[in-house]
Image (cartoon, rainbow, N blue to C red; front, side, top):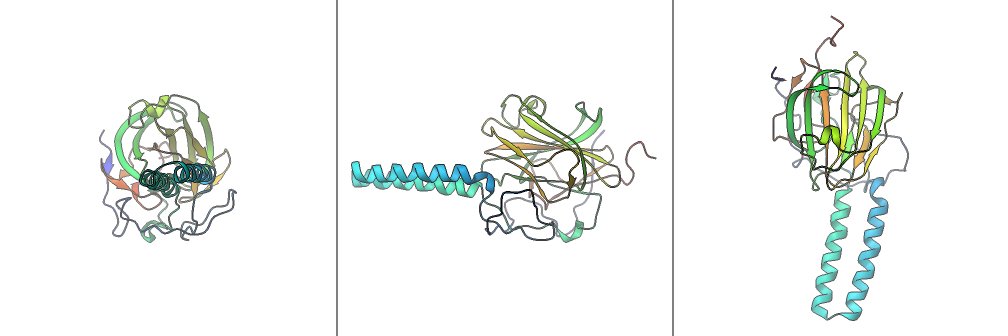
Length: 269
């Protein structure tokens, strides 16, 4: 069976690189999230504070040592390199000002991209961890240049959450979805659809942060976690869903429409 496809509503974001991104104020380290219709106004993500602080301290020590003990030309080069490194780390943990597209705000069938990145898989698979049925898998690969915040693709009740230890295969490896370190979250929508998505660690990304837990009321567009330095997110959709993205397409988290769910959940007809 070939996954169904649907036209994207006018105005819905297509790519992850063309979206305007501004930096706002820091958010307190808690589980409070913003409504999808309100821009997120933060500066650097809380998950990056320790890494940024460590990088800045190392850069400062290296710069002072270089200026004091090395020739001028070499010290200038070293200072430039360490500053670029700190800027890269800060850029990686930036938080965009972003809101869900108005065209899908009231569409309960809409499934939004859980991450910035590139669509690397659209295929029918058998999901055997919890759903035990065939699903349409849409996979989004996040490079080190993407924002690595993850968002809930749908609203509903988190009825299953697990963290699995595993390998660190490259994120585009076919077995990374089942063999790598990963989290699995299942959200039951108000209409009864069960949507499973996975955060998957990659060869570089070796830390997954998830804010999900059993019984949580998830809201589409709220943060569900963060994966550090290159990774992948898989979304498992019910058969009959209308896939709205293509292979190789760039996605923007909480803005790109990746699918529309069937009107009636399987087994309820």
